[in-house]
Image (cartoon, rainbow, N blue to C red):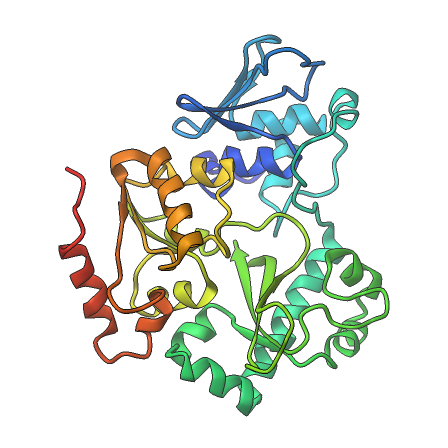
Length: 349
């Protein structure tokens, strides 16, 4: 017997803009829609494929095809309604599917997010487990997280971890998971070395399944890049908790995000300053967006781009005397400073 399908919940958990982007379809803001080349027919002239985040729908004005996110997966994967639901409602990202020939021949301008199978998903979950358990037992890594002002309830709830660099391969073999799947997802190099070794690791988890991991160095003498994420397009970090709220805070870094989560505030991290079309579309669902990006040229520029697109709903927040939200975590009255900053920020009507 078929189980009942909660269509509303399915659409809420899988925004049309995110699903479209997984297939490498390059869409850009145009009026109240995101517009790109239609994957269902040769679309060489003016782009005809429109995605509407307000109604969670899509429509092509040339081939007259359209519908919701389920219909999109039906068409692009060539599957039935039930199969499309299963693809969307699996434990992580969409399973391997074959887009129409016209789409496979296209050359998307942006790199699509990786499409993971069950082995890759299992390796991601295993990495989160082994890294989280190592953090709880590693006094140096644990001390770093605590000195950043993040309490245990928060970093355990967010499944924060630490990649020591010498445990993942053995754990995968103990679980009888294919090491090559971990290579494909980016957790391991072809030489077997852990990609995130020596970093505190934060996973983006949705419906109980990690989709992507990002790591931060903890040694100030480390000359490597401070942040490093797995290959593929970065998701909006913290989506599952934030999406159920009307208002949201947007920040740059993982520790900015963790600071706000420790204060019970819905937050999304860009994990950088890049503002992509799908990011803009995803933020349109919120009533008010507080922009608390870093107080430096890159952060201010990203904040301006977000505010220009989001209009009156975007509230840039100026933090006095600190570079970012994470700096407030170690202050006894950090939360009060953040709240007071709203009082001195001109709010939209």
